[in-house]
Image (cartoon, rainbow, N blue to C red):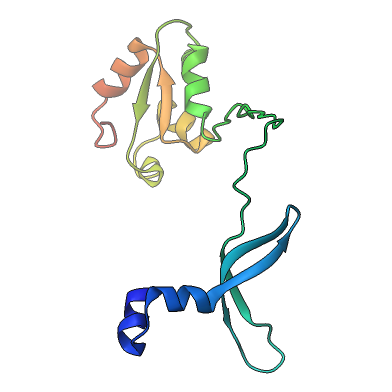
Length: 147
């Protein structure tokens, strides 16, 4: 932007910097910065943009305290929790489990109701955590819903 202003108004960067140089009061005393003010209509405060004004002195007695981030919580952990339980949601068998997935819940209503379709419809979930035997049984049924 400075280059554009300089080429239009035949001014140098030094002149523009001198025009926008300002002193502001900070908790550490007065500081030099660059300040651009755009006046607006009546009743509106002017827009003020400042660059700089930061004390760049070393603080010998400064104490740096790192904040440790808190533990992240994942709102969509339900499937992971269901898998970690290791329990079939159809026959209640414990052990190794797999996930059966369908494309759309509204397809459950179109097919004949079976045990696994009723379980999915009741939970309103597109996934069902089942043991290997139940998963094989689901896939043996002739249905376009299974993947």
